[in-house]
Length: 121
Image 1 (cartoon, one colour):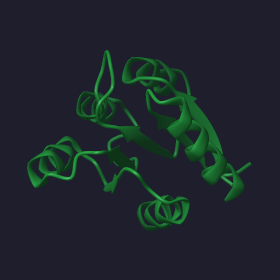
Image 2 (image 1 turned 180 degrees about the vertical axis):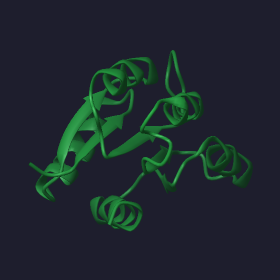
Image 3 (image 1 turned 120 degrees about the vertical axis):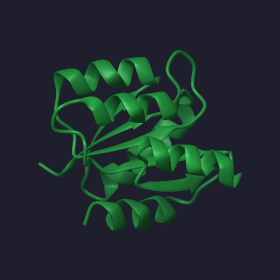
Image 4 (image 1 turned 90 degrees about the vertical axis):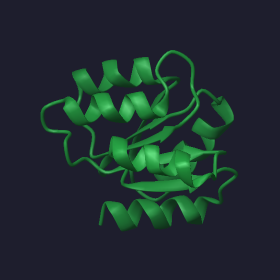
């Protein structure tokens, strides 16, 4: 079994694209629709990486990263932030929360794989 990646996005289209891209590259992918669902899944299972959207209902990407970083065993888990926001201030918020990398939407599959391989060699 490949390394496990949890993808979190409220857009079914984005989740499908991420799942297809990462699965085709040999990763085992699980999906969550929002940060609240992702936190439940992370509490119940172990993942090697998290790829999360920034703007989501219930628990946004920044809150999700902050909560994941507090959980035992996840302090150093690679976390990639996906967002339509390209402003440096938003990027700094993600970095302070604990994001390992950043991808601006829309993205290309090879761009996602490049960042994944960079932060989780």
